[in-house]
Image 1 (tube, rainbow, N blue to C red):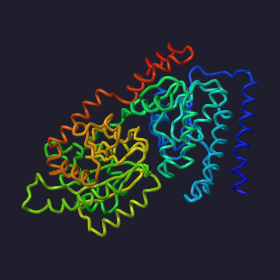
Image 2 (image 1 turned 60 degrees about the vertical axis):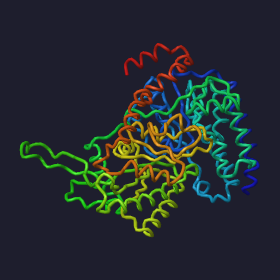
Image 3 (image 1 turned 135 degrees about the vertical axis):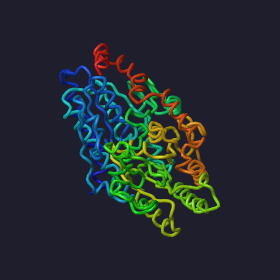
Length: 512
């Protein structure tokens, strides 16, 4: 039965497309709002930060903005408060397809795609009464979204913007191998339906050069590097205390046991409250950072194949061994290593396996200086977590070697020094020894963590950390925030491409 369904799927899709073409081709031209955009992401809307930032920038510029994707994680509160922003959730495929074993991938994938086709066309052609001026699509995934949005903009007279985050066929190649038939078909599909757009956006210069040369893209080509939004910034002791006061009940024992138990209910593993002084007894208690607190190392991930967290696990073992040596009484305070609280934020298929490996390593080796917490930190707390941390780690390796991890941009926005796994175009973001450190092996990562944290917290403002933080601040001033960069790089093309609404856009920005 299932193979028969797969065989007739193309015929059903062809018939549907024919009916849609007839409906729109022979119908009168529909009305169009002055400014409008639909952003399509074939994934969890709340886990697509770049698309949410796009949506907020469009809404800030007066566009009626609709974000289409799967419901799940929370959206940015600032986005939800905007009156000209709306969401339309897609109906997810049934669990039987989502939870099917990998051995059935070749059978379930076509059925999943067919359901996605029906859901996307239902939203973009029926539920949206007025045709949008722009349709912005995130790539990847490429199948079926690129073909569908090309059909939609043809039928509805919209203009297409493709935001190239990465290459879909390269991600598929990590699962099936680069020479697999499906990978070759996916590459041809992506090249065919991604070649033409009103605007092509790229996260790196390397991606723009490769796609322009290899695929001959047609349309405006704009490199729009990721930049942190305004709410990503370093946190002071008050913000750190407020964050961990809420998170303290969620911290696992292997993290809270890194330091002596707080003496009061107003203390956390990382912060404490100073009692009012005798001079000013009416003042409220003042939050401060504990002198015996662990250093906080933070990373974020979707737990996909392009991030090898075994590198971090091996580095933590090396850190544990070095930390034990450093507590010998013959060592001075300046060379001792602090307990290390590792927080890994994210959801994904590889999380449980890594958690099991951590627990096995922790119990087998008797870790005393390293604690690990894998958690999903909500969207409003994520920048606070980065702003409260002492060091960041990125294990993103890029399936195409043409994209850059947004997590590093977020960390830089919070003034957080980052140790990043090396790959081809990383130098567009991280300069080794200047605004971050670059490693290739677990031993290199361990050496970097150890060298940066020796003497923490009394030596937390060491020359190397201070130098890196200073350079991050300088780069941030040059880069600007997401909205500043978006207005400078992309907004002129949208004004030029809009149908006689330049003055209205300028008025909207002036009022905001």
